[in-house]
Length: 346
Image (cartoon, rainbow, N blue to C red):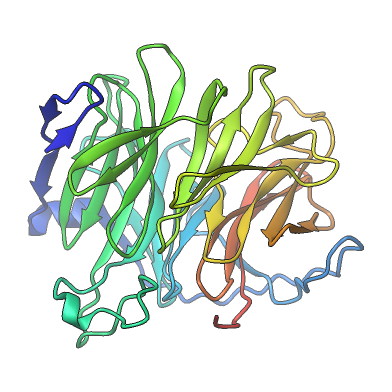
């Protein structure tokens, strides 16, 4: 059941995927993660990128990892030569394609290992981390799928059950992020033709709007319930924001940023760091996808990343350890995914 601002309710739809349908939804490629891409250190960086690992799903011509959970499972989007967009899940070195039956495009934006249903098994530290319970892991993937009628739907996929998540009264919904409590954030296109953020918790929607802004774009959530995203101000300039669990908004712009984020941009948040991307220089390409650098924001300080021999660098997701996923664009403007492992636990 979902609750709108006016108090009315509506249902989300759930589809149980049978054995045959699961084969259509998941197309598995048993390929190990083995490609190592090593780059020299950039002068602006305080972190080493020598451990950067390229993530390009088999058959992809453009790849964009977006989400990573504390166990290292990774979700994202890749395109094939026919121009089709497919979601993917990379877990334990194996890529799994995610294609919702009947959709013309599927994206997988977030992944979480859900906490046990029995709260007594939850981690006593209260930080939202799941505790191992036997060999079964409850993974949940969220994202977006587009249907031939031009409607974009949000979804959650867990244990073979696909749940469509559509904000009431709109034809465009994206479920962008999920935490270990199963709380989902995303964005939708309102009747005012502007984008708004939302949370979807315990079956109910709550709208998120940055005060005085035009639109909300990328959005994510951490285990504690803090939310981060991008907003567009009245001058049509993008900025990042952090929304704490007590309702306080903070604007985040790396020094020298021409704009932080973009329409439909991605970013990641753990308990101590926010990662994303910002415009370093004006675009010179028709796609407008060059000229971006990546950043890490922590306690008021910034680390900036601009990978050598690339036209743009994007950070999209971060887990509790500080492992980062993102993508870069080469000279031909082809996107390549990567994992930047940190390997240091909190």
